[in-house]
Length: 131
Image 1 (tube, rainbow, N blue to C red):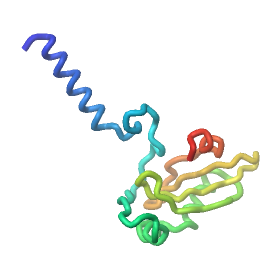
Image 2: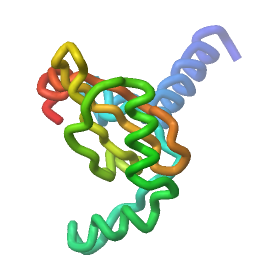
Image 3: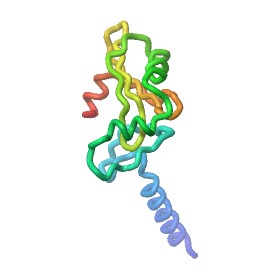
């Protein structure tokens, strides 16, 4: 095999590798997938629309909203405005909105399986990304 053939095979393998690992970028548009984090509980696609979604998500969660709120406040001190159990692109997380002492609004994502902080973003970050 000559150098050009090896280079061609290497480039082909690299292209396939990038194609298969596309988890960090949305299909074909080069934008970062939101969310870029992973949780310990994956939510399967629902077949029947959003009917019963809240009950289905609650049945999958291993921690409750109280534990998620405590974890969020330990990371971002302030006043809790809202707590919701969400399916974020197949990741089961609690979204805990907190108003900080500097009047910023932070959205803390808590893994609904183990209580770990998986992401913290400011409300302005959400507006910019259209969430």
